[in-house]
Amino acid sequence: MRSTDVVVIGSGFGGLAAAKQLAKSKVPTVLISATEEHLFQPLLYQVATGVLPAAEIAPPIAGVLESKESVEVIKGYVTAVDADAKTVTYRTDDGDEQIAYEYLIVAAGASQGYFGHDEWAQRTFSLKTLDDAVTLRAHLLERFAAPAADEAAHTFVVVGGGATGVELAGQIRELHNRHFTDVPAEVYLVEGAGELLPVYGGKLSAFTRRTLEDAGVQVLTDTFVTGIDDGEVTVRGGDGAERRIATETVVWSAGVQATPLAGIVAAATKCDTDRAGRLLINPDLTVGARADVFAIGDMTSLKGYPGQSPVAMQEGRHAADMIRRRKPFGSEFRYLDKGSMAVVNRHNAVVDAPFGVRLTGLLGWFTWLGVHLFYLVGFRNRFGAVASWARAFGGRARPGFAEVEARDTADDRRPAGDATGETRELQDASV
Image 1 (tube, helix red, strand yellow):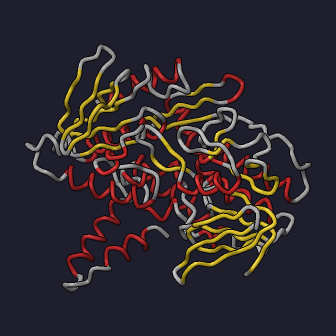
Image 2 (cartoon, helix red, strand yellow):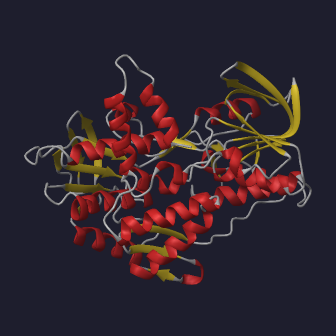
Image 3 (tube, helix red, strand yellow):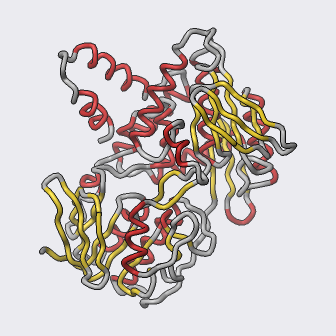
């Protein structure tokens, strides 16, 4: 069995931040990831609506960490953790393998939650992975190409009025307003709270609603989904009245739950979990009674911190700093809130910054652009994103849709019986 000083599970924002921080002290580290790319998840909605090609938000992990000589990247799916033996078992294309560690950092993220209605997963689209975005993108193109008389094909329901829901609803409506103007479109945004972006509240929430409604989005707040069937969504408003919406497109962004790995770690470390299966970690980010196992990001619950990338990155660096002896073991993690932001639609965004600074409209939009360019990994990705944003927001192009057209062309040219071509193309689009 091989061994290393630190095993990091997950290649999201938290895992990547931890690996980079450990590399500063050349701590031998193995990062295990189920995918070969680092996904810039906040921009998945732009892949789904054709603003960005998939490759621009998913650079290869090996490329991102190629200058970190002390970090090795392995593609594998973790199936077991033995906290007493200090080993991790993971599955690769060649079979199951084990690795021993001195310290373990688990940053496996979260999956979509459906509030006890897991059957809805088969009737809705989610937006957690690159495959989710690619699938939704192709679906949207097909629905906008449907005959104008097909009302259900041109009706889109987004469930969840947080950042993802707001951004996606705004972009779907913009597809109609600026790109598919010859067909009708109805876009509904359903939120159970009394306002959109409820964590922002006040001026920013009001601006968001007003901007979306001015663009043609039908915003339904104080409204809950009570049923999802093939071709129909049932919602109930605050007055108790139910309404049925005929649609072929329901995008669910209303809840999260921990991935199965959280349960594996909880059992291995005797750590408690919340109702969503998230690990109830200690203030220093350790898990259960283990001082050598850390958990970070969306798969955890601590002090009500939001499930956002800045939290995960700060937690990753905090755990790494204790391992590399830059902070005493047991140091309490304190989140430095640098603000939140969301795009409403073209040239409109809201920014909730520290010290009470709140920005809306064009100024907020430029602030959003600058921050996301800063965090995009790699010069190539930044350059590509700028070019795509210029074409999509300055003009009327949708660079991401070219990938769908290229795939369709390849399908037409593929020999009969080639069942693997589509898988290859989807993989090519994600690296």
